Length: 103
Length: 236
Image (tube, rainbow over all chains, first blue to last red; front, side, top):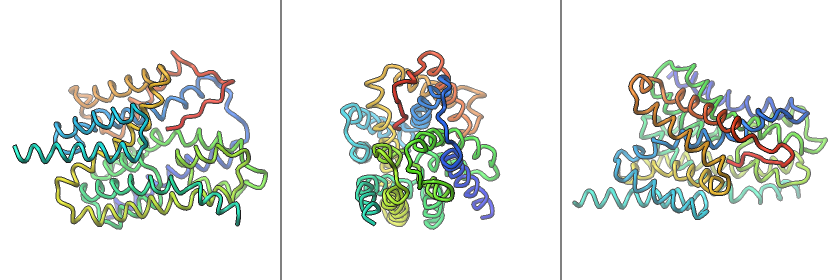
């Protein structure tokens, strides 16, 4: 239980500080081109690394995970909103799981 | 008060979106063995999606404090850029303690909406942040409570929802920008390497996500430096 509180402190504390310190302290714009480029790409890189390959295993079944991934990727490609893509990927995985259970 | 209500209204769609995504976070936390109140506390005090998801995966194992810190710093580094960016657009009244308090609410979506204002007033920013915070916390609570009674097959299916959201964030910009597409592919391939290759496989996922992302972003910054004159912001 102590472990939980220490973890919570690190998790929320570091997330807070990384938001608040630059907001409160920075009064100038970053000019360095490399740093700005790096900061520009980092969100996409983080989300891609978090998604692959974990998305395939997220449902506990590779087939339904794969189906959910394909459905989500196709809908995202056609610019559907975050919520719709998330729900559709889940539904796709659920239907696949149910089909597997019946077979 | 009028400005607060204006912010509140602008925050409605974000709040609704957070409600559904954090619902999944609640379910995932329960499935990893957390109590409902732990999931709610994590959401209320952290207010981030990718960081919390990585965070609970680290928390499952005891004592990996350094891994937790490194993974959070990498995953959340984008917020510091957003904070720097928004610090250029706030009104003169938005300073000191107000920045320290309201900086907590700097999420991707709140930042994106606030950036559309010409001048960001503190009271508007507070209004804008209110419903997203409520939605994120409440959704976690609902997910954690309902997650306990849902059939396992439905819970398992819902665990993919948060990745669906990530796809919806990264794919549309990747269509428009080849450099973003390449950075995404590099990051995904690197992390797959960490996942499957011997030795690399032993590295905890919090660290391997960070290493993959940093290498991919450095790769992108070296090969495709952005045009600094054109105002480009990370909208993910």
